[in-house]
Image (cartoon, rainbow, N blue to C red; front, side):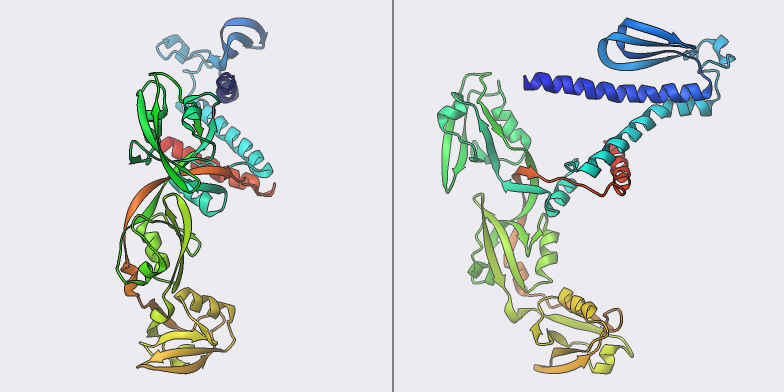
Length: 428
């Protein structure tokens, strides 16, 4: 029944798109003075028709789409080229407008529907991996890593071998699941008679052998999946802070200090600008927290002092290391910038490490929160405590939030999204 309803819904929606498309041709042809002989809903044979002016409006038996029949759409007929009411008799510019009008109407329909959707709230369009990452980082997608069992049919093979809702498939035939095909090739009907799967049930891991007849359904449905790249720990430096914090080979790094990590570059950007690192790692499809506190091993190094700047007047020098501001320890360059901007025009006390000694100077950031200094991080050798490589890991979409905008801005966001989807469709 579900498949049947899906087919009906597809036919209705696709037919609407075709009708709107043909309506664009019809409208522009009429404006151009082209005689439209028929505007049909559905495909022949005809059920009913009524002629109004030059156009016969028809309803047809095959309930799929529609069509526009214009006078003189055969360019081989020389008699029609001089007919002012024929399509081929119109200038090239007008013919182009008639042809393009169908696409334009589809674009306007998408804009209209998206404007309504954004005004009342709708799920975001996930058409690329970047879309998924953005939605995850925005908190619109709630994920659980691994291939989660969503539904098990009673008396099915999956039911008999003990699969349950919430179980996590971690491997198929000993191989980690990295693509949709890894699941489809084995779980679809008619591909094999037997295979094994590794399943996590709560805190335990089981290997389950599945035997079946060819073309026999297993009777299991999975949550919607997205496949993401994550840095995976290949090795941990012995005696390092990372090892002491609890890192192990095979850990997948999901986030650092709340920022989602999807590449080595993402990882380095965070760890090189913060002294206290709170990791969320995935170990055997269980999430856990690992905290690496670098303490006083990293500070901000002054690389330039502008002439006549607030920093120069206060006595800052190239080579100084900023360790504290108003008595609070500094963990990153971002903190120095944020404190300066938050206290623009107000005097702050800076603790500088210079030639093995700590000195205190007072300086006032300008109206923009700037002191007039250049900064770079002092890199901690522990950036390389972990030997990393990229790994593809499946994640199940447990829920997806809605995107909504005020009714007066929804059309602008809808226009931007329509254009983005149009470009994506064209490039594909």
